[in-house]
Length: 75
Image (cartoon, rainbow, N blue to C red; front, side, top):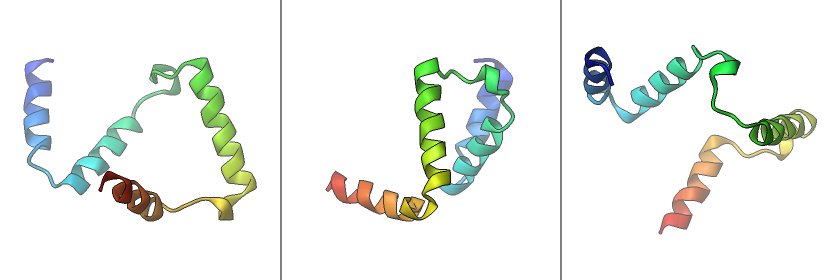
């Protein structure tokens, strides 16, 4: 990691968890599809899931529902 990247990381660690997640999303969005480390198999799974989401939008859970379910499993 470069010195500037280390400085940025140190600054990012000062942010709230929500702000860090937002920053991760913003940085992720700057990557070209070709730069993403996704295998052809993973891409096929993602495309299948996106097609399912588009075909059945009401069958999906919100992030709040999924998060609640995941947190209940940790207990």
